[in-house]
Image (cartoon, each protein chain N blue to C red):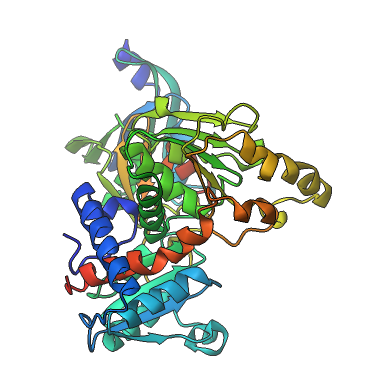
Length: 155
Length: 306
């Protein structure tokens, strides 16, 4: 069943496949990767594909693009159980399970407007993950705790 | 041991550290009263950086350092210093690091003291950051409670007023919860304690969130009053209609235990009527005076003088 559904999108020659994204979150994942209307990559997107594990899931395929470690951390915050497959010549070269990092540095802005990390000081934002699913992380500067939607809302 | 360590939040102080500080503060208090000369920090320099106005905190830190035989350098006015020219806090701290042995900072942004501690090898003491933490005020409050009531454990404590922005109460709630206090938090609904802070209290059952003083303060050992700031309200009439129900006067005092105490971080405006000052339970001026021996104990411990 899963095989049949996944085939709704064609195989890609080179690029990445992000699978097991929670149903409905694929567009958020693409926006995290800054893939928008100006993107030069061919993108396939399947939403609400039937999945044995979780009922429904989303799948994203981006041709001729790689993902950086930083981007993987960011995706893991929205899709903590996603897998990323690196495809070369139609074959899976490497498959990685995403994992929420213990420390999220530099990629998120502190939602607390009054936090020093949002000023022009020469520091990166740092959050320590207190709980991964649902995501709760604490700013290393103002020490406030934030839920996933608060952290990701304005990114 | 807090020797050579920064004090950014109350969590930086272990239970043992706290006990040692409270004992040392008692000794400092005795020395001050006996006019004995204490020269344990001779030739050491404190740099005070106050990016926000402060009277008690700044004066008591500076007095504490002078009383210990040390010297104080300060940025007289943020408006005329390099900060006004756009210098980052990080750069100012690097400079203070070169000029002093300990840095005391108050800043309007939350997390400023933590950031400062990452740009210096010298200990940094947080003297208040935004509506964040103010750990030395908390230690001073605990010292006052212990000195006035004789113990810290298992007290009934009521915190009244602005519990949302009032930075002094945030650290205090976390500290009191460690001492098994039963805590009542009484505030107007718009100035309630932030949820992130409640989440940090281990025993949430010991907290009661209330809107009114009526019937809720008669069993209090400590009534801690904070200032409700006019500027928190968009409608001045709302402030006027509300302030009366969160103010203490002699008739409110009559409903309280004879052995209780009233505390306030000061400055007070309308929250405590001047008539209450004569009541022996009014502890707020004694509380402010405790700032010097407590900060002497903290600075001396951090700089290894005792």
